[in-house]
Length: 259
Image (cartoon, rainbow, N blue to C red; front, side, top):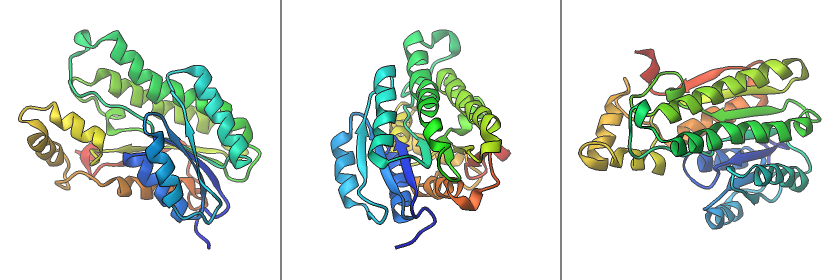
């Protein structure tokens, strides 16, 4: 059974729900063998792994707490050992805030949590994985950023800055390894229908239902996206079809950042 990722080995963090789960499914259907990164939802990830098409071989689950440096490094090593190498790394693990606050009221704890999962983990995993990825053909890194890394959403300073940093980390990796063939790109989604988004909407005036209406109306297309729409972009950037694309931040946002 073929597919544009046939023979590829991929690691997707945050792979048990939301955007990450949609990416795992898309990659498996495209022929890749996938290591599903999970933390608190490892049981759900195990069920996913068994339900996915396994044309590229059996999928695995690698659980880790990415706030812990040692666990992060062990997870990277476990992925490489289990898959026998690595061709694609997608960092999709993330958290959002359920209550917004201006900069001077943003806690150090929230700042550290946002930086720890979105940016520090991406750096540490990339640092650990890149030497092995360089041994393969056309390796690709895809970070799931956010439109909040391109424009500043009021009250979300820690999330905004973490995602902006993630996007520049990808550019730095792209620059460092361009001559080797390793590519690094970022997808900057608008609002996506995920549990994180619904939690965020629940903290808005009027509750979740009204919050989702407000978030949808922010997009010129008048709606928010499905996780599968982000997964299709990730599939393209991870594949050899994007072989001359590196250092790009691709908004998939229904036009939100064009106005």
